[in-house]
Picture 1 (cartoon, rainbow over the protein chains, first blue to last red):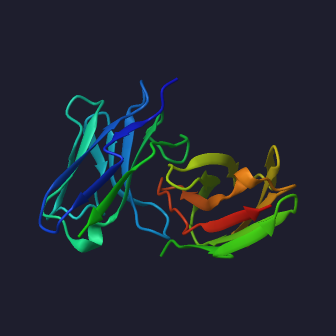
Picture 2: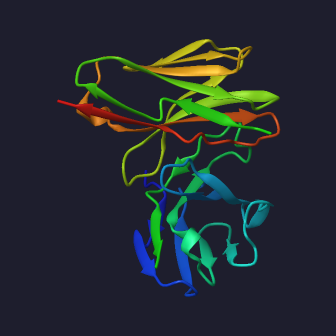
Length: 116
Length: 111
């Protein structure tokens, strides 16, 4: 079974530029998550989708971050304009179940962003 | 406020030795707790999941314990191997479906 696919694996940009990350979840997984993981810290939830609807985006900095999952499968996370503090690994995860309390999260390998 | 603390922050052990990682959390009401292993440059992978009624659960050389009354969990690794070098993350989940990732313990196993 194919896992969660993410691209690009690495991206270096200058501050105020824009960047987009792509995620393809495990086939059949209706729930998709984007996490931000800063070096030395645990992942922090940015947004949770159930099919193509947003379940939780309370921690998404909406002035610069946006995410979409138009057809309920692939998802993109965009940052525009980027700030130095956005340097982190962006992890995509998917789950068969809507509830995080019952469904195991399967993570991709992440997209490492460096903002100069 | 829901919080997760893990100790130690980092640990270095010799190959073949055992170690125990600690997790304290304040998630309430509590539903379950997972331990994840995150290799460098990779995404986290689930090791175990425990509900509030379970005290211990094993997965090979990994044994997790849970005391829901004191809100503490531990992960014991037996006969460590070089491949155990990773970050181990404690993840309690509340009944409100909020999943809180701890900061992780970085384990280095050296020959």
